[in-house]
Length: 358
Length: 274
Image (cartoon, rainbow over all chains, first blue to last red; front, side):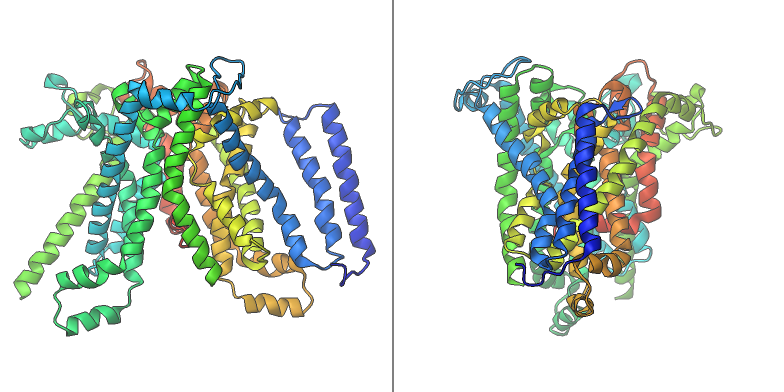
């Protein structure tokens, strides 16, 4: 480790200065407050002082010349942050979910799987959530895949104005779920008679009375199915972009070869291109699937507390922060995590394996 | 053959135009309602064009949302800058200085971008309260930076992986160190990926609702939380609400329209295959 040690006075002095400044900062911020405007940010001051102090280590290490160790030392703050805020907090949540904590005062009495058993055996609201998540997930993924693939195939036909169309289809991705939920709740207004409005009004003036709908206020389970429309509106363009990227990476020679063999345009897509797009479909299913298991803001803005449109993300929020039932809230959060983990971990592991081979 | 081809081309354009109408409909509604005079705002004539252009809805919406737009701005500027610096460092270290198990560590970090934040919300609130960063904007900036580490690291790592290792080797033979290579070789080449990450983090933080609604007090609500509150209020007319929604969406929409190329690249990075 010390093979390449070279003494550099300037570096040593820099390291010592950083150390002293860091320690002084730590001392200062633990004894007096740091304010930005009206915000007390003393703890951020402590964090920065700590990082300054810590930075003396990589600075001093440049004298040693072992760059592998140096890179680890430089990575360590980020690794520590993720270790605490992701994995540490998940462990803490698991602990809460095994407790009886209800009310503002933490209570970590261990009760095993009690909260989970209540959710699955004796909680009608959670059953609604599970059904809604299932309806939403299936419809959302299928909707995005079908529309996304369809649009990608159309845009793949050497279209004039391809960039314009692509720009329009991707535009909703830049808008927040809250904003789109607010607008769509007006578009999907279920008011009838003289108050008829939104898309229903368009249908009525076109004489398409049969299409007039109660939208997301339709009796369950179909009401939930309508919440898929704004979600697909936001993410179909993304799915299209994934597919289009995939199609563009397939070489023209392959299509040409199929054409020479007498395949029609339809057959080229059916037998050559679609099979090659399977990895993209898998990626899309995982990305869209994990989003739909987490769906929260869109339903908040669209459902406005309608219990028939409830999803686990909202249930966790209200039961924890309005109902103060922390133990149950933690259990719902952990169940959401399990759902996402089942979907994402195999994908991440496979991704890691292929990376390692390179 | 030719007539059939013309027919199929027409059909393709027809479908694409119909699809465009579907994708633009909500934005058209926001604009249309926003520029109507108060007198012509009626649910029954939602789709009618205004007789003249007015901005009174936007003035009323601005009066409601101005403090929250400011909060969002205070949130996203330091957040996106600091996040990208951190991501750049991590991406460089993980792509060019592969230490033992660095792929495992990278994968463990990446998992952090998929988790539902409901699974860490209770500890997060308690922790933020404990370090006295609960309720205000600095705490929200801090949280966004921490949970932004996975995606920013991913985007930079994929970008740096494309920079030839031979160039770095040449630099090392010339005596450049790990930090020297970063400063003189990598950083000057990083502008495009900084644009991608800053725009991505800007959009994410601007559009975030969950962290904001849980971690800030009413005075420091970013625009998403305020908009959601406005939408639930019976006191606000829907034309003002549509104008407010457009105001809330405008910054990210503008970024998309002006810098869409970088935005889309960030978007695609989310599917791992940079």
